Image 1 (spheres, rainbow, N blue to C red):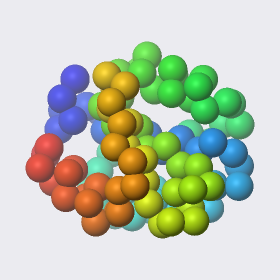
Image 2 (tube, one colour):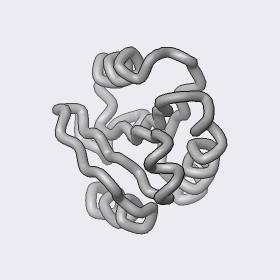
Image 3 (cartoon, helix red, strand yellow):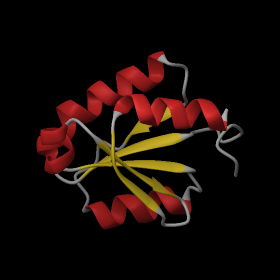
Image 4 (cartoon, rainbow, N blue to C red):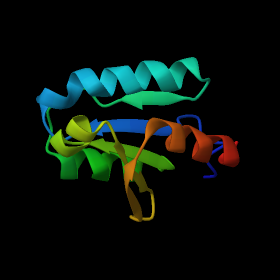
Length: 100
């Protein structure tokens, strides 16, 4: 399903609970920008979170690990498995605007 049409456009996934605070900040920012976003609050392994998001046919998954928190970046994973590493929030928002 295209990004602009998906009921949920983005799901934020964290590798461990230590990244939840950063994920919540991203969630609030994206929600305020008008995107349909969810935060996976489960403590499941990242592979299970990704699998669930792919089964739900979500266009974008934001994978947040300690490296992303330390560098204030985001890893964008598409439903087809392609990934973009080290995106700043501004870059992610620009990509989202292009896909609206």
